[in-house]
Image (cartoon, rainbow, N blue to C red; front, side, top):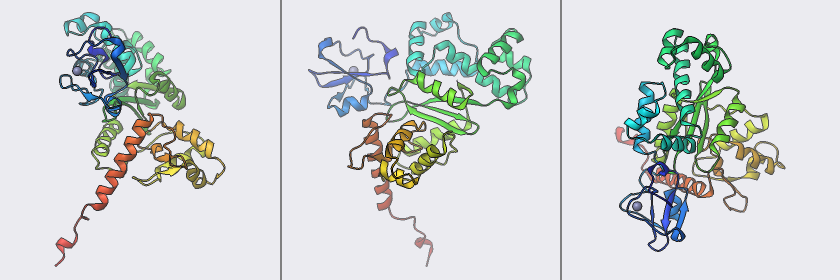
Length: 350
Ligand SMILES: [Zn+2]
């Protein structure tokens, strides 16, 4: 552990064995000896290992939320899509090296690629709404039309004139009680929801791009707004059934397995063998396990509800701690809903 550094906040926690307390990396209260430290991917796993949260830096609050200056940067990008220059960052009190490091680790792309992707995502929206090429290029921060055309073609593999027919996945990073997740949606539906930290985000986004054959960019989409709302309601224990359109291409077998996962009732679990039987391939337990692992839309397609026939948790792309948490959360939500007094229609009766 070297200097306190807020740019690592949200990427890991450290715990001090001698005191039993865990902190954010930026905490100024502690300068422990290295051999005395343990590192955890998030506050939940540090707490699960028996450490208490530091009162000064409160690492358990909104686990892994991006630091405040990231929020400022994102708002800046919303208003002015052209990437800020290094001196703009310095003026805003943000060390460019720190921004670069954070974006690479948290967003799986360079700061520059993030800004350009964001600008191109807005440009595609503008063109599809019928805005002029000149205006759109200027809004995206280009001083020449040919520069814009080249950049557009690099991102979408098509010229701006083809904008109307272009498909694009928009990405958003969402905070949850289990840590940050990356969500993606195209006009066809939600196509990505996965935990950061457990998987290689680079590879994940590459897989999405190759699988759907279109550009994958940070940006906005109404399905992402809806997903965020439904996720918040889910984590608050007030939603059992997501209503979003989903878009996950796959073979007939994969589609059958993913549909079978969605049919597992909230609060319940079943085995890989149950799913194999449900899709009419009772011998295909192993293939079911593989297909389960290929699910890109965690939580909404509830692959966490499949456990081993013997009752052991089995595997989970988001890590077993999260799987355990989700199953407990759903069981508690379901039993609270079952014991709550039924919405009273009797009150209106005489
Ligand atoms: Zn602390």
